[in-house]
Image: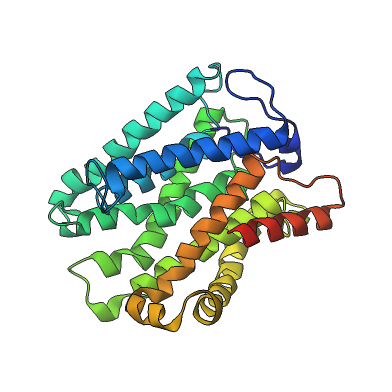
Amino acid sequence: MEPLSPNIEAQATPALAPAGLALRPIAFSVAVFLIVHGISLGIWRLFADPRQAVWQYAPQPFGMHLFWGILVLVFIGFNFGMAGFSALKQPIRGCAATVVTLALSFAVPAVLVYGYGELDPAFGAIGSAGYDAAGLIVLIGFYGFGILATGMAGWPWSASGLSPAASGLAQIAAGVCLTGLGYFLLIYPSVSTATAPHATLLPLPVAIGWFYSVIVVWLTTFLIFDNWPWNRLRRKCHTALAALGGNILLGTALYAAHLALLRWALIPPDAIEKIGAMFPSWPAQLGVWIAFWLIFWANVAGNWPNRFNAGTNRAIRAASCWALG
């Protein structure tokens, strides 16, 4: 996985397959799409399919390890900029990053569940509650760690002369603070057995749906809109802080819009009744599909188009990704 570059236009050059075969952009995009979906379906059939799985680990702990794999990729690709892997040639680089990702996606949540879980029952291994509590850290962490290296462009460490590894460690430390704050405000009161129900800031379904809407706005503004409108600000610190907070404000508006779209256009009333109290979380279900296409479009499909003016390019990209999502 290559780190997401703040200069999105530069990603529009024809891609090379890991083995060095030059593929035309459309062929490359189709090949990656098919390979990713083929591997995903294989993993699903082996571990997660409720009827046909060979080894049944869903919904937990499969979901916990899957989510932590995503967050580890953020650490490696975003915060550390592939430091330690970039010197390796493909396909060794990709294989090494994959092995490290898999190892950490099992090791880190295991420490939470089987280590810290001995101190805090919310993370305990009895039942699936501990797996859920550990997995939901990723919901907040995806934004808390990801925004630092993307919309905030590594500020303030990117201009400090630090090495990529040192800058990555600084971003990890800041991400821990952002993620911890968001988690203990939005998630932990709902999963902790020691917290009274009235003490929660938001009901858990609302927190999940709302925060994933923030993630969708972040990915859209950074990947598809080239960090617009935050990049209109001249000073790096202003751009970084505007991206950090602005995505939250726009995400709130998107959450309300997606709730209305789901209720009045996409989900039949009888299905909404069956979903029940979890319905406020469903903007996250919709957001996952949109997020896939946003990431695919920028990193695999060359962020097409790039031939028009910036406004037209961005409008076509957004319409394509959101319609597919």
